Length: 405
Image 1: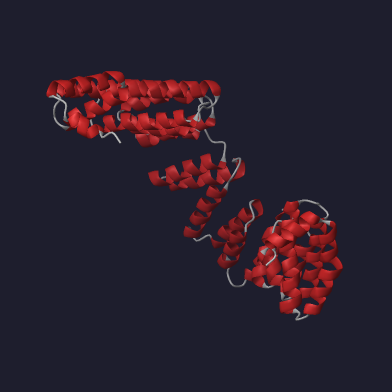
Image 2 (image 1 turned 120 degrees about the vertical axis):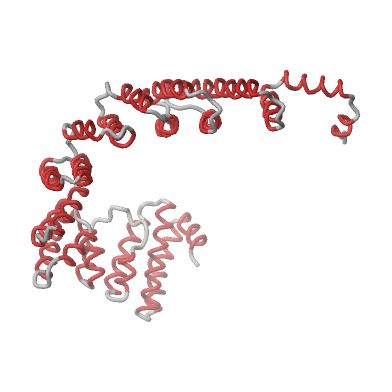
């Protein structure tokens, strides 16, 4: 095998120089590596080093922007080109952070990136905003960014402007003026209330939060949390408790159920518990929360009804914790439940359904054999129902052999 290293070692100085220059001229990547080597070796003058960095910035940033433009035009592009953009931007940002580029480069990059950011069709939007955050370093930079965002009425862009005024420019006066006129969603009111709290205007913060709870759209969880904390601090315990219940009725959860009961004074705990439970019973869309309460509090009969009578939205995908729990309390009812599921799944005539059915058949065997201690009944079920289906459904038998252990 040819040893190129030994061959090169035989070359004269002039021959080595000619070889190196030919390689550098023939391949741009070799040229870049050669310049990196010369820079590390201290062979470049200050002017040459600056020229190298500027050239590297110009070429890599231009290529990155060119690719992003194409992605914006077509709504995406090849993964390898996406990788090039990230690699080039990493190099450019490193040059910037290390002080190897003139400050004017920051403004150039901000303009080029913001133009592509506002196109909004490249898939790079989050990355571009992150890059801009690393590039912008002065008030002028951030005001330039605001100028790009200002004409856009979209709430998301307006929220970016608010963040810039508050956190980047430190202009809390302008932030508050704009924030006070952009209150629509619960999160808007919650953000404004917390700002006023930090500012020391707690009375107005409370007023804004209460208004947001009445008028805010969308999720109100932040407002409920803030108001509960304030009412509790103010000693208005009954008001805080009523707020917890209101929050539960607005967006019920097991956690809020527990919190309301824990917060209620001893004399009201049972009444609060019953009120929330009754509300869940009258709103079956939240039956899954009631089921968790029944499970944790030992309401086994109610849990059995939930498991065996409800419509199974997830298509008998797998056994639930509740079903396994109920096996020992209601073995006969659960066996009947599993048998209905198995019949339904086998009727689908699909391998995926057969695999799910096998999981429930295993549970039937488990209950008959380990809980009821009646293995003969399992044998009868297998011979009278499972075996005939295996004969009629070859795919079911095939899945059985793969998954029964």
